[in-house]
Amino acid sequence: MRDVIVVGAGGGGPVVAKELAARGLDVLLLEAGAGFEHSEREWSHFENEANNPATGVFRFGPGDRTQPPWARDLPQNCFLWQTAGVGGSTVHYFANSPRAMPGAFSDYTGLDAADYDRAHAAPLGYRELIPYYEWVEHTLPVQTAAMGTKEDRFLRGAAKLGLPHQTSKDVTVAAYRPQENAILQPQGTDERSQEAHVPGGEGLHILRPLPARLHRAGEVAAQPAREAVYALQLRPDGAHR
Image (cartoon, rainbow, N blue to C red; front, side):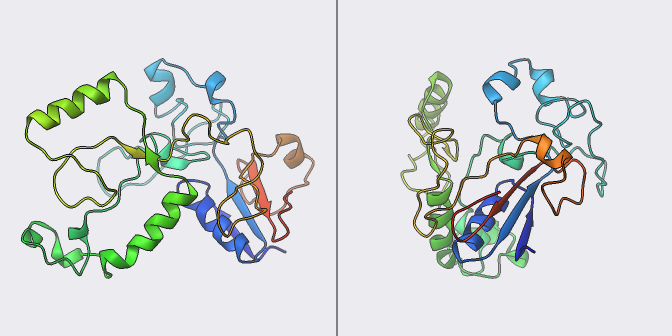
């Protein structure tokens, strides 16, 4: 019997699972979408193969792309782009991880406060959230992305328009900066280390998709949907199965 089952290994699920396991709970993390273990071989530069909402790599559906996508009821006639799989929708927006504007919080008193939807402001102060931003940014990690030709030209254009250069993760005014995202930088540890060496998480193992044969043999419990073929149990002793 697990203490906690976290459903979904998108942008938030793995962080929640890691935090709970670091505090001694027995945690099972489930993901029904693709594992993206071999993206360099599985992904294509053809736009339709990547983005087709019915058959594309970045669709909202099971990891087996021969199966139909999942249906979604929406309150209006629109298309909501959502990706299923390890990483969730962070995959299709390049793991871009900006902090929210301080004006979206209840304690904001800036001169432009009236420009925000004050009736639906977050019921907490922005400064209260900063330690949690910092912890998640450290865990993922969120870093300044490498610059390419496109990014360089875009930023030079923003500078010519007179926008200031943003140098911190806190966004307070209209400005420009390189993207802050959670894509692992070169010389990172992805695929090279089984352990997550972060404060409070010693001995915990990074999410790894399990071979489908384990599920067919019934060796992995607590998978309510047959598409849930990626699971990892995190235990306080650092073991996983």
